[in-house]
Length: 139
Length: 292
Image (cartoon, rainbow over all chains, first blue to last red):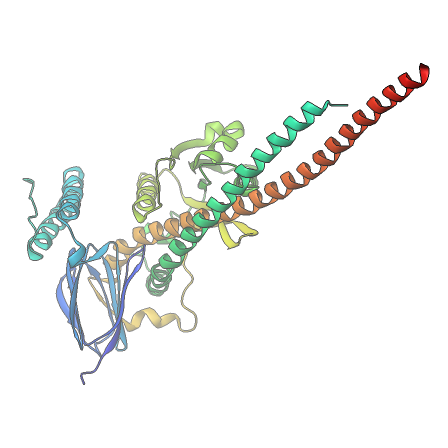
């Protein structure tokens, strides 16, 4: 049996998952990364994307929209601003998130416009990734 | 002496009052359970957040690059008070005890020569504070349309507070809310949110250095601090929600019991006066017969 670690996924409103995982693929702010048991301790912020948890009996996917992940040798916990299992995500939810990111981009101060544009692009990529039409409003 | 009809009317009116308070108590009990569940499920997030932030804060504390949100502006001249109360009354001393705590703090700060600004969340607090401090109020958050308190509500409030901080409108922000202990005990609490105060993890202060950070420590901190503030506000809102329902439940329980006592008393009075009327009539009949 493969080695496992404790994995927790929590959002401010509820606990989404607490399982023994063999690996977790996390959309980190500086790039995707996979955490496995005995990973060096690290903390990274998240970008909007799809998080995948692999357990001994299958894998499940969640969308996350920012927050951070705390990885240590014993376990990984992800604190996501907003998170849903991929199966529960509807077209309306993606539309709403993309619209919110778009509005933020429009209002953004020139200094942070790049960050906002990246956020929007990430949102759109996330929508495509899970097979929903991201309905991109023109930037 | 009220007539029989008056008494009867009063009894029936107290009876319907009792029905209403009983119903309100039961509704509050159901809502309380939901509010407690919400507070319960928010706890893991808040706790994790707190411990990570504590570690991070400890590792950058004292360094020049520490963000203002953490280290403060170096002054405490302008104080922002965010007073969170309920949208509705009929919940015992819940609203007034929060307002009383805020009022004490305002007077204290004023006496120390500080500038005070107030943001109210919830109608009841605004009504009570407006009488004395209308000139200090800068904003009001209306939650009467909000059915269920979600994280987005807290985020909106946090964003507003942080924008004001960035604009240099205040130096220190404190939130006022009621901590839920039990149905009969809610504790009005003041908590400082800006500059952020976190309980550093106990034991080794170097705990934060164990981790590798991606992006940099400062980058993460800049990203997390606003979230930390939002989380604290969210926790406070949920605690407040549970406290409100708890306070309403016990207030309505008392009201129901008092109404019951009142009905008993009125019923006795009603029976007595009815008996008096009967006795009177008998006396009249008997004395009439004797006179013949």
